[in-house]
Length: 172
Image 1 (cartoon, rainbow, N blue to C red):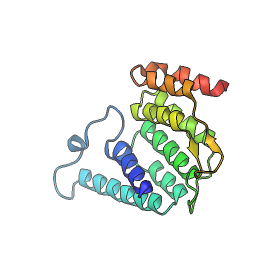
Image 2 (image 1 turned 30 degrees about the vertical axis):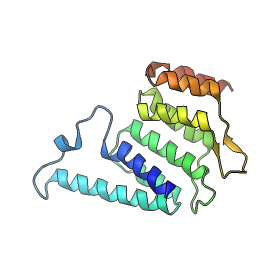
Image 3 (image 1 turned 90 degrees about the vertical axis):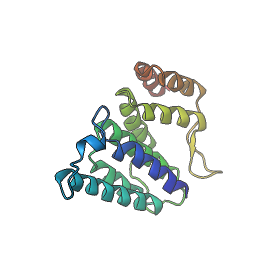
Image 4 (image 1 turned 45 degrees about the vertical axis):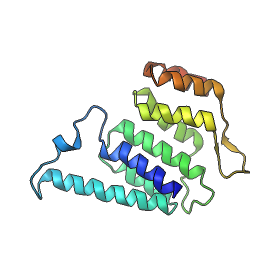
């Protein structure tokens, strides 16, 4: 259930909204049945379903591949891929874990945050608050970090501060 919820949230944030600053789906889609806009929307809906299915069955590498094929903008794709990597690395029951590392995941989410993507900034603040483990008794993949959490919390209202937060993590 947790995987499905997280997957659904990512889909809403990434694939349905489109690139940052883009038109809404309503203004982009062709209102006529069978038009080009309808075909694009059906394609994205199909990709969304495949991503939810992949995440629900612990196939994180497949979900990453599918998100990369979406029509979302680069910031949304970087954020979603990074978040899926972290989710997969923290899932002790993953049937197809991602091949990427924690550092690669954080770099993708940070890249998105540096472009001003607010969901990425919020996700980094939350990750620095809670940390990440692969199960309750497993060693930490990401340790909670109060200094980074405070930095990312401040970046929520001042996205230009994201570069300072990235620098803090790199210097650690």
